[in-house]
Image 1 (cartoon, each protein chain N blue to C red):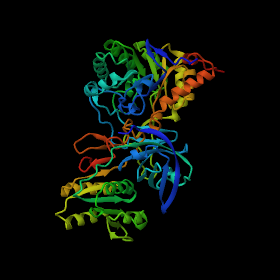
Image 2 (cartoon, helix red, strand yellow):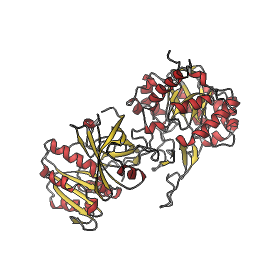
Image 3 (cartoon, rainbow over the protein chains, first blue to last red):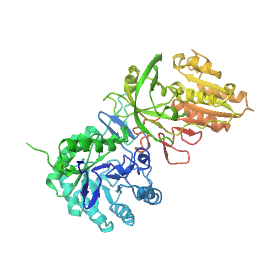
Image 4 (cartoon, helix red, strand yellow):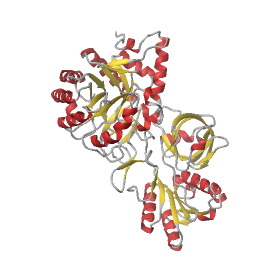
Length: 305
Length: 264
C-alpha cells in the first residue's frame, strides 16, 4: 500500500509536506523548467514588497562551511509587477501557492496582503517577519513580540485565507515570538529564517558580503532549526512548518519527528534543483519500510529521553 | 531551450596543459549535443568540502562520444579538487545553462578577445563558427595573459587556421602589453573593416573590451563570470548592474551579454 503523504495546515490540503522555501525558487518559473511544480506540496515565493527592490550590490552570497551566507536584500519586482507578471503563471500551477510578503512598516504588510486577497489562487500568505538583510522593518518586527502580534492581527483583517508567520532564530526566545504570532491570529508558523552571520576575507580584510553580514542557511543551521521547531511545537498549538538545511528525506523525518507538519527546502535547491522530487520519492520509501500509513504518523513523535 | 537537468558523468581524461591549467573531458553526457558556445555547466564535485556547484564554460563538445571539455586554472579550493580528479571519477553536471553567443554574419571580421582562463567559451565559439562555414581568415584570435604559460592550447588554435595573436604582459610570448591594446591597434590599422567582438576574460579586460566596442561602434558580445550558487536564476546571487539601470543575473540572463549592456 502506498503511504499517504497528504498533510493539512489550517484547512489547506497539501499533496505532500514538501514546500520550497522563500527566496530559493524565485516565483517558480525557472524551477518549472526543471520539474513539474505539481510534484510539490506548495511553492513559497520570493518575498514580495510594496515597491520593487533592487537589493544589495554584489557580492551578496558567500559559501561557508556546510552552508551559505546571503544578503540579497529582498530584491523583488514589487506587488504591481508581481500581480501583472507573476500571478498568471503561478495561477496555472497545480500546487498550492504561498506568497511570502515582506515590508518595512506594518502598513506595507497590510497593503500588500490586501491586494493579494483578491486573488483566490493565493492559497496562503507567509509573513516574512524576520529578514536579517534589510535596514528597516522585517527584522525589527520579528524580534518584538508586540509588533509581531500587531502585524499578524492587521494582516488577518485584510486577508481572508490562512496566514503563516515566518519566525527569526535571531531572538532570545523564539517561543515568545511564536506565542505572540498565535495571539495575533496566525494560522501556522514557519521556522527558521536564516541565522545572522558574517565571513571576512583574510587577504583583503573585507567582509565577503557588501552588506557586511548576512543570513546563514544550509545544513549548518539544521540543528538550530530542529531545536527551535521542537521548542515551538511543545509550547504552541499552531501547526509548524520546519525550515533549515533540509536536503534529504532523513532531514525531513527529523523535522517531522520534532513537530513539523510540513517542511520547506531552500538552499539545497541551489545544488540540486530537482531535490524536492527525490525527497518525496525517498520519503515514500521510508514510510513504506517503516510500515507507516501516513506521513502524519511522524509528526511530533520524537522519542525524547 | 534545453531543459536543464542534473546528470551524472565521469572524468574521461584530465590533461595538465601548463602549470595550473587543466583540460577535463567529461562524459558520457547525454546533453553534450545541446551545448552551444557560451553555455556553461554547473559542476557538483564528489567532495563534501565544496558546498555549491561551480560554473564552467563549455570549451568544446564531441558529439560522437557525448563528451564535453572544460578548461580550468587552479585558483582555489574547488579548482584544486578538480585538478586532482582522475579518469573515472564521478562529477554531476547541471546544464547546459545560460544564454549562448549569437553567431556572427559571414562578412564581418571576428575579433576574438580572450584573457587568461577566459579562453574556453571562445575556443568553442571559434570551432562552431568554422564548422558553420565561417572563413578562418576572417577570425583574429587575440589571446592575452600575464606570461606565456597563461596562453594554453596554442597548437589547437593555430591548427584552426585563424590569425592567432598572443599577447603577454611580460613579453614572453607574442606582442607585449595588454591584449586590449593589441586589439585597439588592429582596429585602428583596418578602419574600413566591419568588425564584431567576442570577449571573455578577467573583469579589467572585459571592461576595456566593452569600452573598445563602444568607442569604435563595434558590436559584439562578452561572456561574464560571477560566483553562482544556483546557476538557474533563482538565488539572485550573481547579479550585475546594467547600463540602463537595474540588475541582470549572470547565470540566467547571461553569461553572454551584448557590448554596452552591462556596467563593467
